Structures are given as structure tokens and as C-alpha cells.
Picture (spheres, rainbow, N blue to C red):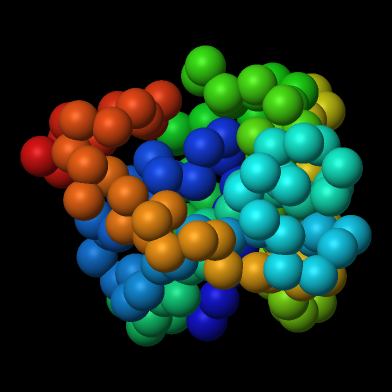
Amino acid sequence: MKIYLAGGCFWGVEAYFGYINGVIKTSVGYANSNIENPTYEQVCSGKTGSVECVEIIYDEVKITLDYILDEFFSIINPYSINKQGNDIGEQYRSGIYYINDIDKQIIQNYIDSHFKEKIATEIKYLQNYFLAESYHQKYLKKNPNGYCHIDLSKFI
């Protein structure tokens, strides 16, 4: 199964989910862009509508989408608009991007049962996903002292 999550800078979200048992593979990229295959510079310009996003491929026998959502909401502020930690801008908005109606319903049920107030995290169909440049992939593994707004200490 696949789900796409945006929670500020994609480096930390990817690193966090890379430690979760049942996650098979992660990659970072740009979701719901209004241009084909945007570059990091184009995404940062705010002209693409893209969001920094993590593709999560998981084993649904080992973990559920509800569990993934529990973990996701433990590392982001769902009420923050276009900001997570020190990351500010439209490309850093939080979002959950699904690819099928079953996941859409699971996500909506989760939101309805866990939040009383409206959250800023967008829940949308994934229109497109373009891999980010290779230097962004597994960035925090390659650069352990790199900036991350997510606390990874429980894994290290």
C-alpha cells in the first residue's frame, strides 16, 4: 500500500518513517505540482503549487493506515498553516494525499474521530508525485547533523 504525507521539510518525515516497522520503502518528492517534474528551486519559488512530500510504501499486514496517521500526527502540528518547525512556505504545508477511495474514507474517519476543531492539514487526492533530486533522498542518513524539525531521538 502507498500513502503520501507532507509535514514540513521532507527530510525529517522520511527519516522518521524509515524507522517504522512495516514501512517497506520511502522516497521524497513534490506532490500535486502544476508543472511537470519541478526542481527544488521551482518548488521553493511558490509558483508550482507543489508540496514537499514523502511517499510511504507499507506492508498492510504489519501496520495499518490508522497507525501511520497516529505516527504522522505525533510529529506535525495539524493546525499550522504553511509552516512546520522553522520551515515556512506553501511547500511546507501539511497534507495527506491518497490514491484510492478506501484510503480517503479511512483518513476522513480518522480525522473526524481525533480532531474536534478544523485542522489545516489538507486531505486531497494525489494528482501527481515527482521524485526530488537525488541529494534529497535519505538526506538525514547521508547528513546526520542536517536540520530536522522532527525529534528522531526515540530511534537513535
